[in-house]
Length: 190
Ligand code: 5GP
Image (cartoon, rainbow, N blue to C red):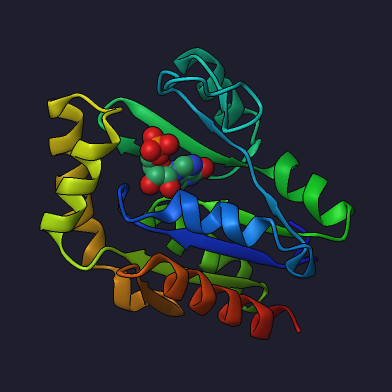
């Protein structure tokens, strides 16, 4: 695999405010960030669109992508729900001279970091506490109680890996977290 262009990997338990932070960072043209759209087998939420938030695949299609070696990495992030980074996305973004922004889970992130080494910056964003995380997920109102429990369990698991990332950003005050991530990325892509 060619290792041209840079990758910014952002990982955070869901409910940590990650999507908001990523969207704010992507809006700054100076960072030349482009979102790497992953493949997933999970159902669509709300008004999500195929090719925008994710490429929504059936399990069969996802398995074919694995067989055809189309993925940089993939994980069963939640039971029965697969997510994977597409090689074609990274290539597309690099070709345009942009930096790829990957919003992926902790194990996927550490795998990509291992593959790309100094070409990748891995940032872990965390909520101030598990209680705050639970509150945010309930408020979001997009997940069933069972899904929320799955996400909390996953968050507790993911937190154990935070120290293996290049940097940890605590999202207590959103603007501060965005600024901190912005500084880290600016320094990295210089
Ligand atoms: P959600 O279902 O809330 O959109 O995403 C659930 C989790 O899957 C998030 O933690 C997100 O970072 C992770 N995820 C999304 N795309 C990928 C991917 O391509 N690979 C891996 N390993 N995780 C992903």
